[in-house]
Image (cartoon, rainbow, N blue to C red; front, side, top):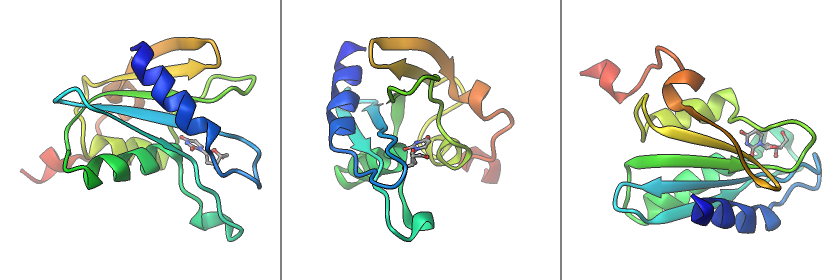
Amino acid sequence: MDDMWEAAWAAREHAYAPYSGFRVGAALRAVGGALYAGCNVENVAYPQSQCAEATAIGVMVAAGESVISEVLVVADGPKLISPCGGCRQRLAEFSDPSTPVHLCGAGGVVETTTMGQLLPRAFGPWSLE
Ligand code: THU
């Protein structure tokens, strides 16, 4: 998953985070193998800010894809980053409980978990079936 880390790190370099100073990158691998990356985009009206995962999802959907096979998030703070609650729900829309989620730092992957572990008993598209 080096390619995912590289893509997420490159996106993170472009993060617009003047308010928190906390830059985040995310990369999604779609089922066909293509990679989509995003960074956080903050706003002076703080609640209008967007997480890196949301940006990456938008890029993926705009490219015509909607099934995620793997997720990677990276930051370089002192603690390991994990997708926020809202982004867990956003990611669940396009993945399933077994989808791997790689949590990374500046040196690479630190831990790999799954969507099911991050968002147990999720309300997903399958809930409406
Ligand atoms: N952030 C993300 O981009 N993804 C997450 O999952 C957690 C938080 C961003 C939002 C904000 O721009 C900064 O990190 C600090 O919260």
